Image (cartoon, rainbow, N blue to C red; front, side, top):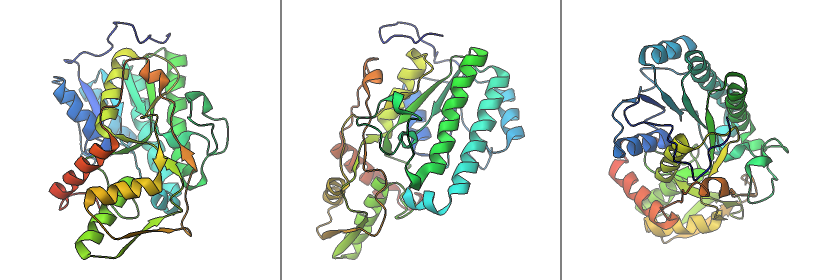
Length: 325
């Protein structure tokens, strides 16, 4: 099928269709769930991992066969920061491949009309030209600290593209940048950088610690998108996009990790010293996405980093007894 242009009035999604959101308790899935409910979707299918292990092909197939969704948002994944990826690369590869194969194979067998697979900007080469265009995929070596996770996500992108070519189903993929927001993992070492910083600076403020040590040099540049803005993008893509190329989702703006650390410290109210542990890995030197394809569809991010960090910290304060940490 050809791409649907940004000016098309065709809508691939009806609010009364059953739509399955996998990973609905996590950062991305919960944001998508909130957005669907806000826009009046009435037949949203969800299951906790304790109820449905998506690594189990037979159980996944039974669930999808019984419930027959018209659309799927594949947001379930095993995720983590540099430390988690470096410590368990085989688990990150295996778990994510099994989740993806279970869902995508069953959805293909049932000919589910719309599937949105969520990849990650880490699929791009470590030294890709900046800002990164979708065409940079598979043009160079990956960042070694998260290559297992990236390989799994690349496999999902190719899987979706293959189903489109072989079966003619209008499945699509999106490539989000670094995300943050409610229901994130706030572990100090195993989570992504922004929630880890929120937790570290909060703990340091409460304990009156004079110094907070941040991994790496502070020089790498990163782009951050609030999960609620990603959820809006997911609905835009599900409704109006039909192309075989993945679509970047980000802000198109980045900043050094040192500046991010300062912003988080300000939001938390920490007034001590910020020190950088240069013996720890930096990861990719820079990663900012070209979002022109999505922008042409009329989507724009609406939550500034300053407002998003402040809101996320407040959410952490309100929920810290129950958050993943």
